Length: 277
Image (cartoon, rainbow, N blue to C red; front, side, top):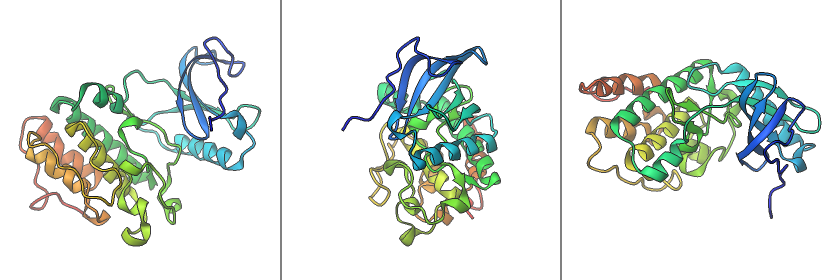
């Protein structure tokens, strides 16, 4: 069954202030459009609830949760929200427009990233996840298609982000191939936490350096990193993908270990290896 769409074409008004340029994509409840904004007088991204779900309480709660996340999280590596409208005929949120390809598109088109691409990316994402953990929040959907490659890279799509306490009791919230074991099966692995985002970071870095996914689902045996990947980098990625959340490094420890590699020095040894919790 086809998903309902607004079908905005170039020049169509989304609201009185927002004019559609082109459709960017969407999910089950929302569509995203590149638009021109008369208020900021520049390009923006508009995420609008699909026409058949404007009265759906669940879809509206999800949009309100994303608005709350955007208002809470203020970090240079995380997309910014500009304004929103949660009521009316077209509930939507207006986001800054970020130039650059998605990491998923870059890998699909050109294959694995070079060290000078994936090392800064890892440090930048780790800084964002450190900040989220400091706030007590979790993103829960860190993956290549939610990363815009720029200077710095930007983490997007806070549609399921929430305070870590609110993630307790959730099951399979996220994307299968990048979902931590505890997101997949909390009964067996414990509750989601900021360490779940470290798993997402590890799965994302694996794909960036290998050119393919580490997993289809988090309970299967992982693929192996190619031998060409520097051992220091491989150890950090492996640590991020530890099945037990308590064995994963903190985000700042990922950054501390990789910054010397970026500078051409040996990776920092944290307590004889990567220091964990």
